Length: 118
Image 1 (cartoon, rainbow, N blue to C red):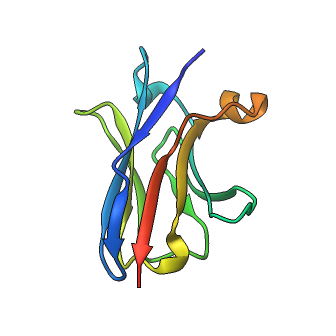
Image 2 (cartoon, helix red, strand yellow):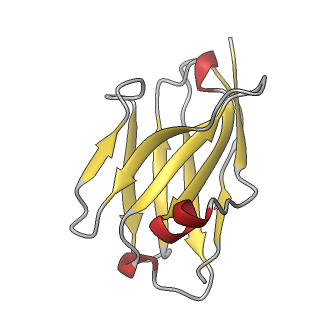
């Protein structure tokens, strides 16, 4: 089973940028399709979908982040990245990546914390 690990989170001011990365243990992430990014805001909110990248690198992002977030594959690093620009306080959340198989098993990694200060 592929295990994923997220990195790149941190504290940033409103309007700033962060780039998150998702690595897959022992696998060529370019062969894993689709890959998803989700996030869970504090206060017990439900985890919500953020972005998807398919095998042909077709991407879709949630309307709440449209025009600010982009998802891509980095073959050199063997990662799937989430570039987040123009961050807002409401983007504060733990961000997770996952595979289709992971979603099916409701199996999640530790995520990476993103905190946007106003």
